Length: 313
Image (cartoon, rainbow, N blue to C red):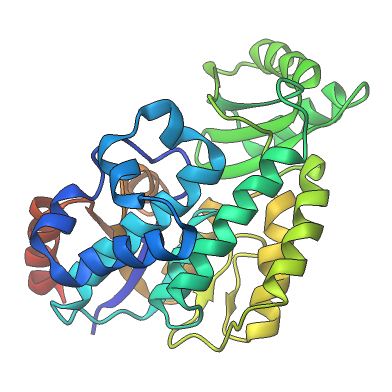
């Protein structure tokens, strides 16, 4: 029997209009927009469908918006009775994964990620932090670049996304220094990311400490299927371990390549990305060429994915 992993995108996948046809065509999906709006006191549907883009991109807005659309996609998938064996998510996407696995109530999740976004935004003064994707270098070279550039300030690996794609984060001047060094070491390209803070580096530790206080107030129970987490790329099912992992994740690198490889090792041969965009689908195809990777960000792509899932599974 084919083992299936549901995977969920993180920040950066948002776009104006996301989730609209789930809201229009799938009653089970629409309720998540309603619940998110009630939990946050804002019109989440309008934010997702109408933006504007600069408002949607704000960390404290993007995180609950992406979570809501991801769960709308999950609801549309769930009503088709598609079974799954594992869940995983990229950064913010871990919260979507935990909701899908029954470990975390959606209302608690959407309130928590909004606070998480606020904490991450407030951890570093505007303009003093930056992130960049370094393309064409192996992880060891990027680590060496960060060590050299980090002698005068913080710059660290934030995401091990896949072969030839490593993201760095830290203080702006140190990130710029690392970009220059990466070019000299043979990087094909360096892409400065349009983000409002340097996520997943040690500058986020205060955000993680503040998030821990929020997580202590909500219930996180054993998920119905294992979560392969970002921090260790290990399957976990214990609620206490999940909380610790979510706190560590804020200031630790996302080991997405290792997550995918661990899922393949666990026997997963079919990945289904639920939520806006298809970034994870592209990464999975590069990391695990032997596996199938599908995405569902709207009704049309969901139907196409489900047709392939039923053919394979």
